[in-house]
Length: 172
Image 1 (cartoon, one colour):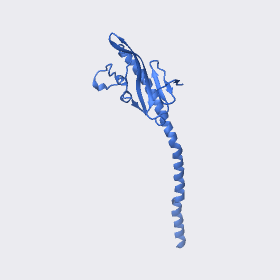
Image 2 (cartoon, rainbow, N blue to C red):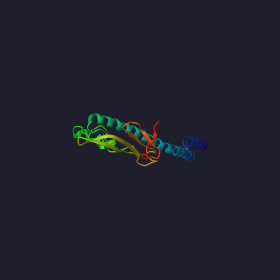
Image 3 (cartoon, one colour):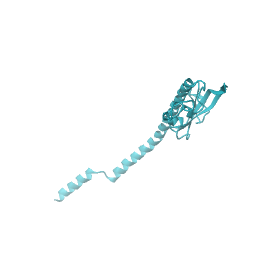
Image 4 (spheres, rainbow, N blue to C red):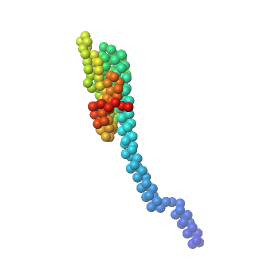
C-alpha cells in the first residue's frame, strides 16, 4: 500500500512543472520581449516614414489633378483645398475632393503635413499658384519618425535627416 502511494506521488509530480522551471521560462520570455520591443518601435517608425513618403506622392498626384481640373487656379495652396467631403456637393477649387480626409486634415501616421511656400501670379485679378512645396514632419522626432520629407511641383521627394523641412537629401 505504501509503495503504491509513492508511485502515485511521483506520477503527480512528473505531470506538472516546478516553480523553478516556470520562473526560468518566464525569465526567457521577458528577455526576448526586451529584445523585440525596441525593434518593434524601429519598425513602426520605418512604417511611418514609408507612409509619409507615399502620402507626399499622393499630394503630388492630387496637385497634378487639381491643376488639370482648375487651370485658372494652378496648384492648390492648402491641403484643405485638395480635400473635401463628397457628401458636401460637387468638387470645387476650395474643396476638390482629391485627397482622403486624414491626409487633407494634415495628420497621418505620426506625421504632420502642410503645403508651404506657394508661389503665385495674378492673372486677370485672379491668383494662380505656379509652385508649392508639401512637407511631412514627424509629430515627435525619434518616436514617430526620424526624417522630415518634402516634395514640390517637380515631383522629387527629398529628406531632412534632422526631422525638419530643410530637405536637401534626395531619396534613393
